[in-house]
Length: 278
Length: 264
Image (cartoon, rainbow over all chains, first blue to last red; front, side):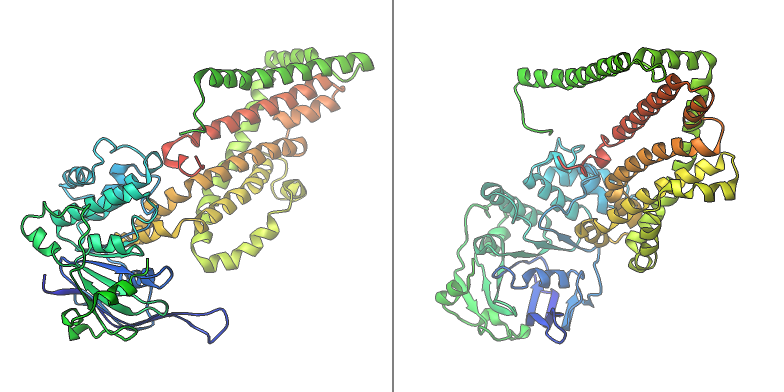
């Protein structure tokens, strides 16, 4: 938990506007570091550009200015070592659960079926191996997608509001399952959501984005979680919302220099409450 | 998975209606037809019974099977050629934007020209052998197939392509494992439409260019002695075989690999 695997330095992103010369600025001076094995949530108001940010990090979108480095390499495109979990319908409807989960496992991998069985059990879909996505509920489909991502054994998983389209109870269950899976797998996870409660429940660290053009407004370290999973993981129940004991502020509306260690500077509870756009 | 859940009794009733209603309509139509011929006193237009006898006569003479086979052969050739060329062409045009820009306008100009308008050209190029109707059937069916394959590629949800690329698969693999299966439902719909058009056209083509097939039967029966019982017999066979072909292609839409693409 020490080496930064995702590093964003002074990232800018603009889309061309309708009229020439009028660009729409989506991201401005975004600085961010994600450590290995860390679970980081990015929250922000709808349409603030957090999804755009994740798509840039994942290599699906080119950025306008700045540096995006993942595992020491600049990002030029999607990479099988970093798998993206989409909001909905990311799994292939023409493949069974089995074939979807095996999609990212090499065919010549002798342990293919073994890996498949491991993950189909982990996401609780045993017995549905031969079902097609249209026969599954929204929550089950999202489990297939998570299993598909894990089965290809990526180092990082990017999740873009993966539970956004699910009903409340399913969402709660999915969160607790995700925490359990994360504790078993120890992957680095970068998770985008507009739901501050979800973010606090899941993350080691919550990055709060401002309105457009979005920049990092606030970094909240969610304590307690680390201790819990160090002790054996079993106690990190998903139902229990861990309050941020210490919320840390990185000068609002200003860029956050990544190496200035904004997490260490003190801040007020009010600051974080105001910055929580739900 | 299909429609609202109905109680068994209501469902059984609906199943019964689905069979009984069309049979009722067919019987009413046949009675109306029969009565019309009798009341009008026409001695040229046949009654349904006369048509049935005509079909029986054709079967006895061995012509029925021969003509049906000849028509089906031409459809198979022309339509098969259209499938083999049209699907790859459509997928390429759908995938490569520049090819689409370059060729789509040309396709849209050729597409509305009725295959019937090509008959003189077909005769000029292929004379009156089997290649002329095959060419016409090919022309009729290649456009619906190409256009549906093209649209299918353009309609693929970007998330499938992104997800697949994320797993690092190469171009050929992307095509085989994502683009092809993702477009299959819509391509199949195009194939169904094209087969209907192909069957429509084979009859028209046979009326002019060749001396076998159901289209030829109709023209020949009229020219050689105004045998309208055989004319209508030919029409009935065309209708029934067309229905059979459509039912056959519809079976393909039930496969799990494509069922996801048809709503429900």
